[in-house]
Image (cartoon, rainbow, N blue to C red; front, side, top):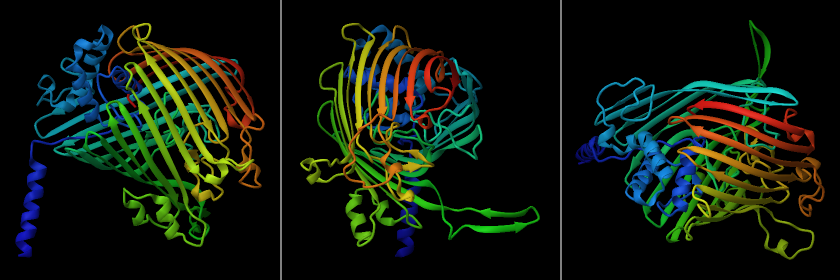
Amino acid sequence: MKKKLLIFILFSIIQILNTNLFSQEVPQSVSNTGIYEFLDELANARIISINSAVKPYSRLFISQRLKEAEEKKDQLNPRQQNELDFYLMDFGKELNDERLKSTKVQWFNGNQHRYDLFYYKNSLFSLTVNPILGGEIFTNSSGTATYFRNGVEARAYINNWGFYASLRDNHEKPLLGLPQYLTQRVNGLIKGSTDWSEMQGGITYSWKWGSAGLVKDNMQWGNNYNGANIFGGNNPSFVQLRLHISPVKWLDFNYFHGWLNSMVVDSTKSFWVTNSYGTSYREVYHSKFIAANMFTFTPFNNLNVSAGNSIIYDNETANPAYLIPLFFYKSVDHSLTSGIVNMNSQMFFDVSSRQIKNLHLYVTWFIDELSVSRFTEKNAWNYLSWKVGLRLTDLPVTNLSFTTEFTYSYPLTYQHYVPTLTYQNQGYNLGYYLKDNSREWYLAFDYKPLRTLDVNLYFIDAIRGPDYNELGGSNVGNPPMVTVQWHNTSYGLKASYQVINNLYTWLSFAYSDIRGDARWSPEYFFGRKNTVNLGVTFGF
């Protein structure tokens, strides 16, 4: 009986894996800002519906939304129609579009689809390979700063399985994205060098209403146009188990469990090594993990209400309790660490409304620690960050959008006094790029006169108060921004254009006045600077 049952199960699996009715998902890098901006524009115009609180999107999801927009093409203006056709040349491959099918090996052929270095597809298998090559140069009164990268990326599909990999060598001088800097720029911090490499990729399995995967990738949680304050994505990528399910139109669920780099040496596991090369000390880091989930409900069309929670913990190995996607982890932690110091848990909420055509309203809360008594108690503040913003599109001028966004983070939000429980990976904050005890006001006008051409005029005023975690003392009763320790006032003009799919070029001029604690900014940008930036990149 058992043998027959086993044969039946194996046969069922084989049938599932060999069916032609399959979905295939690989995430699209959040660095590909053009497609994300275009989907946001279509959603604001109420052509499509998206859950913009959780990124990255899968390439399949993007393809389906573009196909949905194509069915309403008469509602798009000429520039949007051209941009839709442009992106379908790339993402149409995920739709099994007859126009893009090929059973032949193609080398750098853009006649039927976007230009790829290598592309092959048949009814079972597809493979895309492209180079990663690009760089940029900055010039101001501090001199010249340079960055360039080279590498290769690939993705493949077999039935319900998706595979993707990206290897990049990065070269930057001087380093502009160290973990102590208040910037959205990221470095790898590999052995203190100006050169570092990063490997991203993973394997996914998909079905009609969901997907799961083991990946090493970046992500953003929280609606924003200038930095998310739940998961900002401004940190080196880390390995994670991901789950995404959407069984009905009004529910979208996301979960991941990740393995972080604590950068804290475990002296009990570290040891001395003596060999023919001499004697050296082999340092081993403490283990560090994260688990997080987000439920998104759509009670009305174009209104998304999201709620979730996360926990940072430092067990020797991954705890099965945090591998259960649906849990409220703070409650689990109270039972697991009863009588001792708890782990580091968080809650978050996000509301996004596109119910008024061409207007996106959103608000996000990140709650690190909350006590009801502190709402009425004098000289007491909860540890939270909140963001509110709007984007108005096509009013009064077609292809013109206006964005304003305000973010405020109270002292000790994102902080923790136990170094293995910080809201960080590899020393980089997982949340908002300005960290705690900060506020930012962002204003921008974006004009898109031609396909994939974006002219962006922006203004930023950002400040940060004292770092109470560094100063020590009581962790209760620290007034927000009692003094300004760092201040950045910047405005600029940037024009970017996507020549062919994933080939970006840009030119910008920025005036910035950065003052205060010099440790929190690259020396290259500190003070009053007029900076010109020119760049080009192919691939991510």
